[in-house]
Structure formats: structure tokens, C-alpha cells
Length: 388
Ligand code: LRH
Ligand code: MN
Ligand code: MN
Image (tube, rainbow, N blue to C red; front, side, top):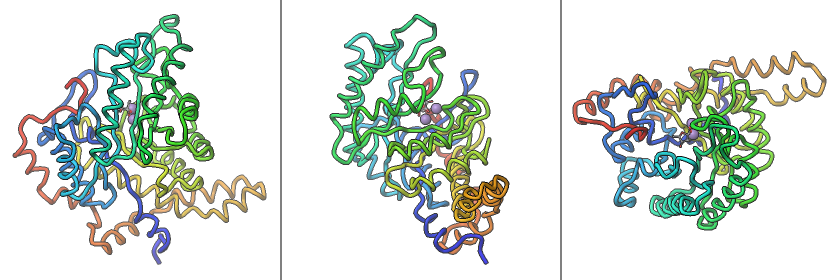
């Protein structure tokens, strides 16, 4: 008998994980960016690479864009290109962290002229969303200060809300705004949207179309992220995930690589809170492959999410509830751990084959020759955006 029931497989079949276009570009640290042969030279090639991930896994039907990293003359043409390759364009990410004007802030800046420029950038992103057919505008702000006394933190919160209101007012009926938080970096003393509470307070004041984006790498070490997931789902404000993993700070490593158990615990809460396969909660990756090949790095990532989701789905909720109600601490924990330790990989491989997909997508991609082909064809690939 398979480890996974027909119902669990039917739920897994619906799973969709959005890929970040920037995962296909070269990235690195402030010390060195290592180039990879075959790196895409433009957004069209990034999307072609993302389509490979979907081709071998059927898990990644959309690609998120970052503006201006993925700026093109005609977004309709880019959309058609994606659709011809079997994928769609997803979330549009704004970028107010690479312009000299934003040294002391963008949406929070003291100067109305700088705020205007930053707001206009977001309005342009919404125009792009109409052309790409995207639903979500994702805003991550690099704003904050480095030294106590440097900035008026209170005034910055007020200006942030005003700026966001103007952006929010421009959203179409079907569009949403998701506000991502991050506890530090690039600012080292205070950050204007450092935690879920601040993001929640800001989006709650905007309205129903504004939600929180939770990037798993954006918390202090030891934070109970699954608790935050539970709370945001409870409040109806979890809009999306940026999945990645980390050992120290915002490492942007392959999701499920550093702490698979944490990924399991997060997905258990997503399932518990009704956020799995819900249109309300977008599963996205936000990763960089600094030293490994990017396409197989993304294939590995979506497979890790799928595998942990399968383990979360096999959790015996009735047995867990019974143990919880009877105060049996060890039995409850045993039920939880049993699900985590269930090896779903053979069942997933078999199921993939039954759907005409390769049992081992990593091996199938490696054997396809695509990596060698792009290495030969593409000369002078670009960086993900940092330093570009
Ligand atoms: C910030 C962040 C945010 C950006 C991305 C490139 O650390 O997580 O989501 O858009 O990295
Ligand atoms: Mn992110
Ligand atoms: Mn990040």
C-alpha cells in the first residue's frame, strides 16, 4: 500500500510554487559573485529556465518578476513568451533598494519628492501587473537606520502608511499588495518593517486586499516561525511565503536544506490553518544559488517543498487531537514525529511516473542536455540584479 492516500495525492496535484526570476541569474555575497556558464542574459532566458523546472516537476507554473531587474519594453510579449513555454507570470516585486535617492528611505523618506518617486515606481509596477496578468504586488522595503537617534522612527511609520495608502488605492479589484518584513539588513539598527506585527499593523490599516508576506529567512535565529504562520492565518492576513533556508541570517539557501523539520512544522500549520492550496496564500521561493547550478537548485527546492507537504498531509490529526485532549505530551509528540519521519519519497516517485513525469526530476534534467546547451549558447550571463 502506498504511503500516500488518493486524497493526499489529489491535494498534492494542486500544489503550485512560484519561482523567483532572480534565482536564475548570478548572485553572490559582497565578497564575490561567481558566474555560472549558461546564466540567462535577459528576462526571456530566465523564464525559459524557470519553465524547465515546471517541465520536470509540474510544480512551478508561475515566475515572479523583480522590477527593474526584469524590465522589458513590452510585458505582453514577455507574457506570451512565458505562456508559450507553459508557464505564467506571477508576483511583481518592486525595488526601492538600489537607487541613490533611497539612501535614507523611500516610502518613509522625510522628503516628499523622494516619496513621490518611490510611490510612482509602485504605480508603474501595478501597470505592469495589468500587462502581465499578475495578481500580487510584493513590497519589501530596505528602509531603516544604522544609529540610534539617526531617524524619527515614529514619523517614518506614519509616512509609510500614507505612501502605502496611495499605492493601495491604485490596485485593481482582483489585485493584492503583500508587505514583506525583515528584521535587519541592510539597516542594522532599526528597520521600518522589521516584523510580522508591523507588517500586520500597516496592511490591516489599508484593507482586505493587503496582506503580509512571510520570508522564512527574515527572522531572528530561534524564532518560532510556525507560530507566526498560525497567527497570520487566524487573522486572515497571510498573503504569501518567500521560502528559503538559512543557517545564520538571510542566507537564501535551498528551502528545506538547513532545517527540514522547520519546513515541516511550517507546512503543518499552513494545512491546519486552511492555507494549503488556498488562493489566499501564495507559495513562492526566494532563493539565490551562489555556487550550485540554478535550474537543478530550483528543482531541488520545489521537490523539497512537495516532500514536506506530503509529510504534513500524512499527519494523523485525529490521533494528535486525542493525545492533546488527554494531556498525553509524549503521545502527541510521537504522532507529530511519525509524520515527519515518514519517507514519502518512493510514493512520490511512483506517483510522478503515473502522471507521465520523471520519477527522479533531478536525474531527468541532468540527462536532458539543457544545461550543456545553454552553457554553449549563452555568453555573458547577467547577475540577478545585485551590483548589475
Ligand atoms: C529581501 C528579499 C526581498 C527582495 C529579495 C530579492 O531580503 O527577501 O524579497 O525582493 O530579497
Ligand atoms: Mn524575500
Ligand atoms: Mn531576503
